[in-house]
Image 1 (cartoon, rainbow, N blue to C red):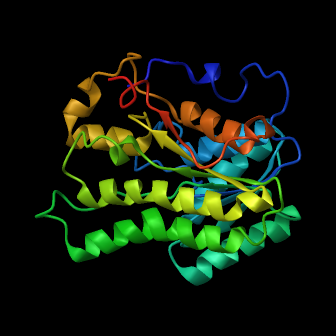
Image 2: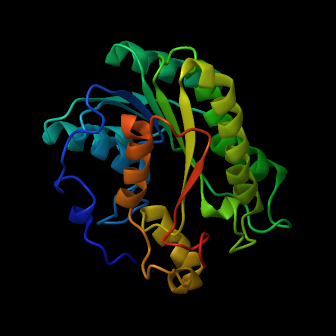
Image 3: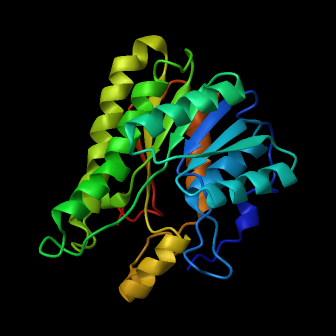
Amino acid sequence: MSTRPDDLAGPGGPRVAQRLAGRRLLVVGAGQQTYGMPDPPMGIGSAICELASREGAVVAVADIDADAAQVTVDRITRAGGVAHALQGDASKPDDATRLVENAAGLLGGLDALALNTGIATGNRLAGTTPEDWDRSMAVNVRAHFLALRVALDILVPGSAVTITSSTAARAVTTSDLPAYITSKAALDGLARAAAKEYAARRIRVNVVMPGLIDTSLGRLASLIKPDRDTTPIPLGRQGTAWDVAEAHVFLLSHAAAYITGITLPVDGGLVSIH
């Protein structure tokens, strides 16, 4: 598990200036999931929302689980931020369109989008059914495509998009989840295609690629595969959701105005220098 205190990277940490001041951000896959844990660690989508709010953005919090989305919204509003909860299944065309259009209506437009939906289904190739495969592709790839297709006609010049992938796309540390691995690898291609198509409109699209991160889902994975917690990481710890959120916020900010079409590992060196 992570040994890094959240307050070193999360809300309440020292900030020089608000990096997302004035940004109108939709985060898809933003609810705080607990998976039945009494004291769950922060999830990536929720951390993106909270950190973005602290950095000056107004946030639309979209999730398939309305209660989970509201948890994130409540945290933001208690801290003095502005956020709105939206519910829908982003893998369905009508829901994806509604989420993007409603977010733009609530926020007065959109100039930032973070796509964070993801599931893991199946068990090795032999144990992965066609239904498992199709569900992974729908949530992990099609949902991103659907949101992009709608949002890229709403986003104004100077906007930015981030997509959450996984180091599974680059290094197959486990062969148990072929559908997950394949879907995460596909996001690199989607992001590059979108980045090239919309560069002339100055809309940037980048991928954040987390490694082993201490989230509720990560802890569940550790119960299933205990060796996850002993995987050697050059920086000596698992990451936190705040580590991943920091990368999203940077790429969504004007500080990254000349960066598009890249995949940024946030993995403690797991893939990059292992």
